[in-house]
Image (cartoon, rainbow, N blue to C red; front, side, top):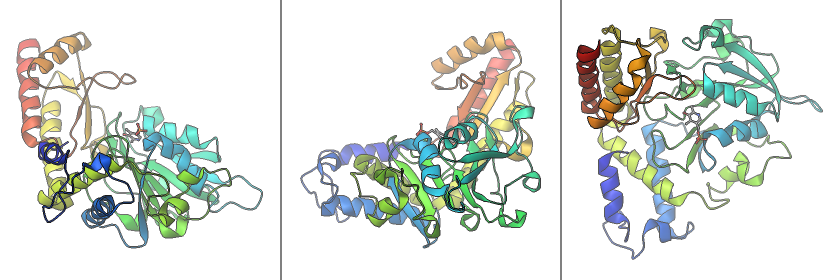
Length: 362
Ligand SMILES: *Cc1c(COP(=O)(O)O)cnc(C)c1O
C-alpha cells in the first residue's frame, strides 16, 4: 500500500469527508452500502479505475468477493456455456505457464470440459509457449491465461490475439498480480479478473472487468451472488460489496492518477525490474532462469547458487529492513515482489544488500 493512502485512510477513519471536505459524522465502515455517501465512494472508485485503465464503455466493471481462487470457479460457471451446443458441457481451454494457471485449469474441470491448449511445464515454467503453437479447440468458449504468474515470475508482455489464431473464443485473463501495473489491450480481452490485494488495495475485493456480450450465459447452478449478469444489473450491489476495501482501492486509484497514471507507473515498474534483473544477471551468486522475453516486472524469483546460504541471506535482509523475500514454498529460493507501491529506492536498497552479501559470502 502507498504510505500516502494509509495516512489518508487513517485521517478519515472516524469521520469521512466528501469531495468538498465536509465531514459526514461516520467512518466508511459505518455507512450503509446504499447510502448516498458510500454510493458516491463506489461510483468514484469505478470511474477513476475506468479512466486509469482506459476500460472501454462496452465492458462492465464489477466489484466482487472471493478473490482470484473463487473466480477460478465463477468464470466457468458464467462463461463455459457461451459456445456450447445443447446438452453438451461447455469447452474451456487453458494455457499453463505456472502454478496459478494450473490451479485455474483444475478448478474449471468441475464445471466444464477442460483442455490444455499449450503448456510451459516441461521446461519448468520459464517460457510462454508461442501463440501460433496453441492448440485451441474450435468449440472452446474461452481461453484462460494468467498474465503474470506470481510464483514463477513469468509475464505476458503482450496479450495473445485469439482472432489472429482463427479462434472466436473469448480471452479470460487472471491479472491478479499485474493489474494497474501497465496498460491493458482491451481489444483482445473478453474478461479479466484479479484479487485486489497485490496492486489495488486490501484483501477482500475482487475486480472483474467483463465485455457486455459475455453476460447472461451462466449455468443454472451458478450462485446468484456470483452471476456476473446479476452483479452487473445491480451495480455490484446485489449483495453487500466489500465496502471498506472498495474505498481503499478508490484511494489507491486516486494515488495512481497523482503519479501520472498508468503510463508513468509502467515506466517506474520497468525501471525497478531492470535494476533488479541487471543485478541478478551481473552476479555470480544469484540467478533467475526465466526467459528474458517473459520475465515478470512484478515478481522476481531468484536463487542463490549456494543454497546453504539461504537462511543467512534472509536473516541479513530482515535486519536491513528488507522483508518478505522468501520464495514461495513450491519453488524455494527468493522472490522480490515489486508491486506499484514499492518505490525505486526500495529496489535499490535490495540490490545494495545483495551486492554486499555477495562480497562477504560469494
Ligand atoms: C494471488 C493470486 C491469486 C489468488 O487470489 P486469492 O485472492 O488468494 O484467491 C490468483 N491468481 C494470481 C495470479 C495471484 O497472484
